[in-house]
Length: 319
Image: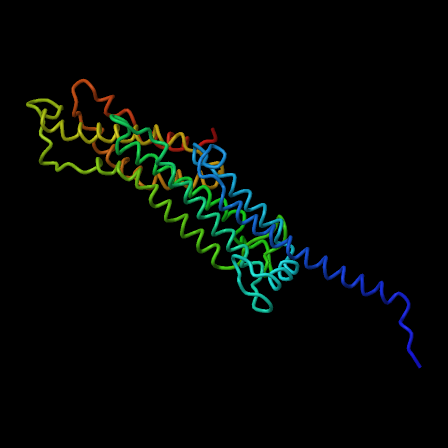
């Protein structure tokens, strides 16, 4: 006897085909959306105050990428469903060899760092050129800004995405709590941050070249007076005046840079103090007691250590 088809069999086949079609369409659209996300990071402009802040603060693209990673982080299974079925620019493998969400996150972070590096390099283009224009010092100041820009951004990424001990599990939490627990992230960001900081601090280290000791045998006094001879006085005058000139040149530029994160701001201020302030204090305490100028002692001693300490504490304030 002929077996009758189950009622609604045709409709079930249509529904099944529709589900498959919808799934394929969803996978395709989802992969395109992720590719567009990666492309938007790649194509973020290198110039303009929104994309490359004039005061070297955190770039908008950094906060956008953090937000994007946190938005997609809960959809681990959905991402795997896409990566298994489509070869992606950051993961050509399909099937069971396809990568997990971390492969995408790593690619997005890599594109972000490339974008940030391009922006940082373009700070040197801000210097006006032409005959009699920018010299070595302005160019160096622009380069210092690029180092601070990278520090601001890598520190921001570490603060928001690196493991901080508050979250557990391989994913490090979802959504707003998401942390990249894979070792590569903290290692890469920390290495970049420390490298940029070391380069930045060299702009303050130049002050130490003036803080050299003077051999006591070279400090000769005028006859029957407590004032150094003209030649001996010049040895100290040149050191104090050289320090003042370099400090003012560096400070007037760096005070316009911004570090919004208070933890980073205080850290950098302390790092700058460690670079030269202790050495300056010993130099100042020793030689400010010697009368090496008849009329202008107050000009050479215009920056006692406590005043410099206060000025350093005003650096990087929010504009």
